[in-house]
Every structure is written in C-alpha cells, then in structure tokens.
Image (cartoon, rainbow, N blue to C red; front, side):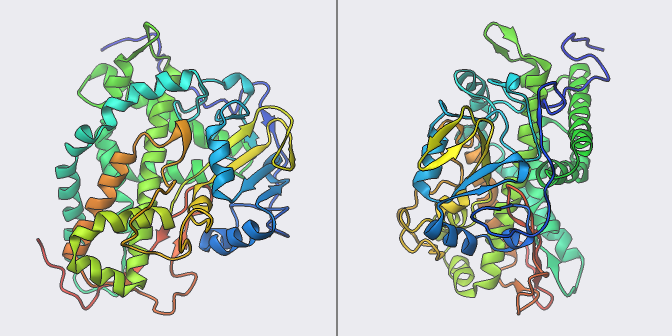
Length: 438
C-alpha cells in the first residue's frame, strides 16, 4: 500500500462552496416575467428552445439582467461574449457554474476545478499540464476503442429486436463519452450510472438549497478521492496516475488541484459530448434531406459536424465580475455573475450568415462552441473525435431513422436545463429497419 500525505484517507476537498466568506443568495424560482430583466437558464422554455429568446434579447436588450442567483448578466451578441471571454483583468473564472452560491474570492487564482476555474497567471501553467494528454496524436490512439464501443452499443440496440423506438440519448449518446473518460482516467467502466448522477446533480441542481449542493459536490469529490487512493495502491498508465505524479513549480500538485481537475474532466468531458452527439442525431432525425446527404457522402461529415457544433453548441460558461464597474452601458457589481452563452454567440447574424439555419456544407465556420480566449476547451480534439466516430458508426449502421413522434410533441424530446444543453431523452423510430453491421 502506498501512502501519500497529500491524500489522507476519508477526507475530500470540496470546491470552496463551504468556505468562510462564500457569498450565499436567496433562491428565486418560478416562471420568468421578462427575459430581459428576469432571465433564468433553468426554465423549461429555455431548455426546449432558447434561440427565439436569444433573438429577441439581441434586438431589444443585448445584455439581459436577473436578480436570480444573487444577480447576473447575459450577453447574447458575439462581440460582447468574446470581449468578456478575453478580458481576464475584469472578469474572474473562479466559478464557472452560475448558481445560488458563489465560492469565496480566496479560491482564486486556482479555483475549484483547475484549469477552467483558474485565473492568470496560474491558469497557463495548470492548462499546460494537461496538453500532452489531449493532442491530436494522443486522441487518435483512442479512436479504435471508441469506434469498437459505438458498434457494441449498436449491437445492443439490434439485440432488442423489433421495438417501437430507441432512445438515442440514453442508449447511445451518453455512454460514449462516459466510456472514453473512464478509460482515460482509469475508472471502472461500470461506474457509468454514477457519472450520469454526478453530471445531473452538479450541472442541473444549481438552485437547490446550499446543503444539498454541498452534499452532491462532496459525493463527487469522495468518489474521486477513492479513485486517487486506488491509483496510489495500484499505479497504472492513465491520466489519474499522471496527475498524481505531475509537478508544478517544483513540487507535486495539491490534492485539491488533482481532484478538482479530475472533476472537470469527468463532468465536462461527459456532458458536453453527450449533448453534442444527441443534438446532432436529433437534427438528422427531423431533417431527412441532411441525413440522406450525409449517408450518401460520408466525406461531408467533418464539415457538417462543425455546423452542428455551431448551431447546437452545448456549453455556456460563467464568469464573476471582479469589481464594480460600468461595462457597455450597464452597471455591474462585484461578484455579479456573467453567463457567456456561446450558443447565443454562434447564432448572432452579425457574425454568421444565415445564422438561424443549419447549413451542413458551410465553408467558413469560426464558431465558438469550444469557447473563446484562454479557456478555450483543452479537450476539443477529443470531443471532435467522439462526435465524428459516434455519427459515422450510427449513420453506417442505422442510415434511416426519424423522430418517434412525427408531430414533435415537446415532451417527446427532453432537453437538459442549466449551462450544458442537449437531449436527455431522444426517442427515434427504427422499428421497421434492418440494423446492419459494417
């Protein structure tokens, strides 16, 4: 058994929500009265279809405000989102999930989930540690196993025989990033259901009472600490062992840094790609012309995939205002939230031609689905590989599919709430189709 004084057994470090000095807010719930003055990304109409809301705000109030979550702002123009993303002097990343509790300022510059929660100059060095694991070359080595697993999932669908509908979100999309991240971190693949629970509680439970929030985050960090101890006892060649042995500024990483980074990889690495795969399949299921075109011309898929990422960008990130200031005509207060809606930026007609259309052969597509500025997603190569392979295998094995509800009943497809948006239930009709192996 290996002992490391950084990791006392039975002790987990939470991301700062329970620290003295943390700002706590009154929980405000209920329907939105006016999206310009009372927005909430937890409302069902935002989850189901946020784009008309964003279009309306872009016309009459490009920087919306809310008193919910203790006060926050929502820019919806590309130029405003980009300006804030690049401005690390006036906006902090110490908490990237907007909720009813703000971590203490003492958590900066590291944050609870480095490097995405880190401010300069620490951010640069924390991010640099992760880069070797996410290069194109490193990710290419994961592709064969990812492809084989996608085929396993289709085999399981085929094994069901004749069924009325298959839930492409819960039976296919969610499992792919779960398996890939579990393999990268050296976690048991059978823990997938736990990963889904962590994702939901951390990202969608942001308006729960403080005690429940702390309990859910503690459960995640307890799980991760147990995985660290397992790796201390049985070192192997994976990302967890790499983080345990990594050094920064001449010394090994603090336990909170290691476990926080693992939390980031587990939560963000799963939900973002799960959502992107599901949204892409949703579009193809309801747009037969695009589906048939991709089936006939698989070489178009990489271009189409970038359009899906633009049009259905799953990720919105939060920032915190550092000091009282006036910014582009609005009076922002210290510790006000800012929601950086990359989905809204990607639908801005001032930035993209035919912004509200899905053009699968769009030539120029400098979208912001992976973020902007220093926090641009370190795992973009991984996400692209997973999305491409997932769609390639599905379209090859199941070339003809459609929404189970032809009338698109709003309740037939369920979209997640919060800052990562994607289908959580996606019933597709393939009952009368032959699922063939490649």
